[in-house]
Amino acid sequence: MHNAELMKFWGPLINVSEYPYESHNGTLQRIKTNHHIWELDFTMLRNICRRGRLQALVKDAPLSGNSLLASALSVFKGGKGLIQSADTRTAGTIRHGHRVCVEIYTIILDYLNVTEPQSSFRHFNLVPHPLDANVLPDFAQHENNFEWKTRSYSTYQAHAGNSSVSFKRNDGSVGAGFIQTILQQSLQNKPRTFLIISPHLPLTPLEEPLNPYRSMPGFLASIVYGKQSQLQDWLVIEPHQLVGHVPFYRRSAGTFGIPRPTIIIINSLHRDR
View 1 (tube, helix red, strand yellow):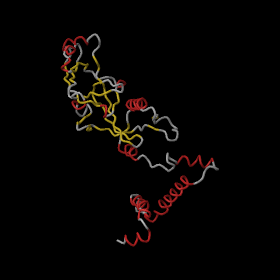
View 2 (cartoon, one colour):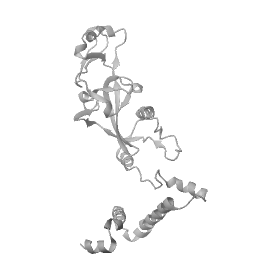
View 3 (cartoon, rainbow, N blue to C red):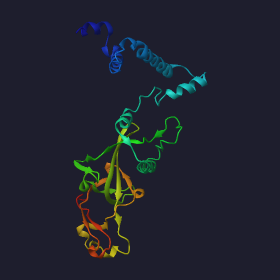
View 4 (cartoon, rainbow, N blue to C red):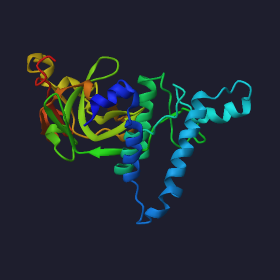
């Protein structure tokens, strides 16, 4: 190493860093050449040089006198005036994920536009999209389980017990249900996890008086119908809305005089979280 001599001649070495060039080398090494290495300068190096010149033009060229050119180059500009890199997390999700069914996609889209109206997520089918549109991808990674605050949660199909949860709704009230689907997506280059919940069906006003736990609030127990709610009634929550697991006990029709199958749920494992 000749760092001492180099620093005397060039000054602080950070000013002559070769990182961008070495980064280009790494990009070239990852290119699949199909053993046609002699064509590399024509197929890749030329395009890399073109891209570099275009980036310099977008960043530095005075475009005030050429509205047509300014409009064309604005396609390549991001918020800071530089060409923005692709959303690599989203690309990975599309590559390794699976298509989300139409009904669940719509539920997630509605949830995002209610909770994050400033983002204005668009349906992927509403083409053509305007520049810088926040398009909700229709691909996601489907998971059977995940961990949140040292606790394991699962889909109902993978593990019914770990799928039974209580959660905080957007209005602050607490609900309970089963996790039916766990989806992981990248939105605006940030990882997000969406839990699709089938909420429990409460007893009707006619049969609620048959619930014996109404007079025993200390048990923190309740009774709901055993039938699963319809898909259009499912909800979207995110992990930070989880309260905890909810033990449940299925009971046959006729229990406590209720003519339909029911579930006894005990909402006490959260320890007042």
